[in-house]
Image 1 (tube, rainbow, N blue to C red):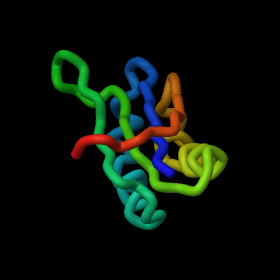
Image 2: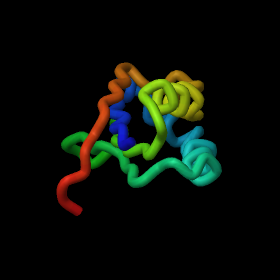
Image 3: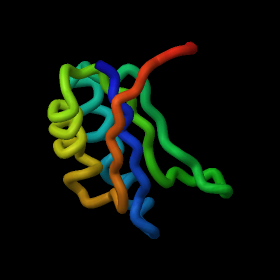
Image 4: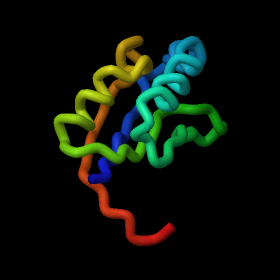
Length: 90
């Protein structure tokens, strides 16, 4: 099953994102369940959130993945939403 993890960073939290980016990318690689991912950008081109598509067995597995993301553990996010997602194009 595919799930979209949609996040928005807390305001003025860019340094948290930068400080934990390597750990976040290693977590993506190590868990092996991310189909695609990337940051949202504000009008100035600064990272301000994330879209991550997970391939896991259940909503609880997606929630567990999101809870253990180094970004989440560092307190980066203001909002996190997880939705089941169906790939149609691409």
